[in-house]
Length: 230
Image (cartoon, rainbow, N blue to C red; front, side, top):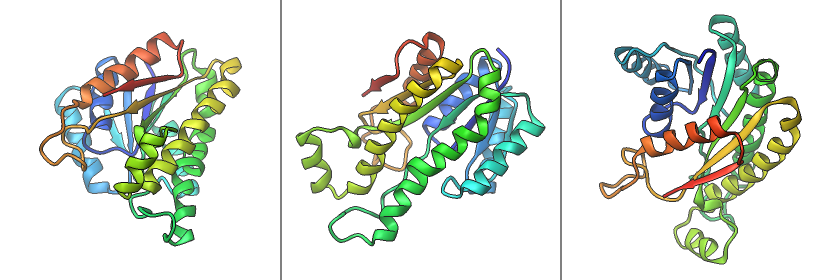
């Protein structure tokens, strides 16, 4: 394999596992997140495993900064073959009945506007690549079922649920829109707690490696839009 995978929302857990999986398959890895120090530590750790990685600080909620970071990736590394969106937001909007509407708007600045900005900036390379892909991490809070709605309301995770549901719809729309241009769009929905994540209170059972492997399966097969792990 050749080319670069951009991982937006780089941090411990899924993004690290994806970086290791795709890096081991020959991709250069570009890590995008807000914290430069954490990015540099991640680059160093990947380097110890023989993976070529670089850091590009940017805020996923800032389309201008995000586009600039992706443009820097294009200029400094090999052509972009994959965009991996691993960004979650919405923890501040636990109860949508009382949450400040500016915070609600911010959910879509990340889940929709940020994602679209990253896709659009990456598209010239993705179209040129014979294996261009957009891979999106999502969560089961966005499931459109009464059972999940009840769980989300009781656990005050309504903001995350709303962002996840909107993001899942965007996945389907982008997949349909871009398939004729040879760009694959796929989503892995996580229906369990990831070991080592911010939500892990010592009882998480799902390894991030399982998620990374599922992304690799989707990327290789390119024949289904959505997959689920739990």
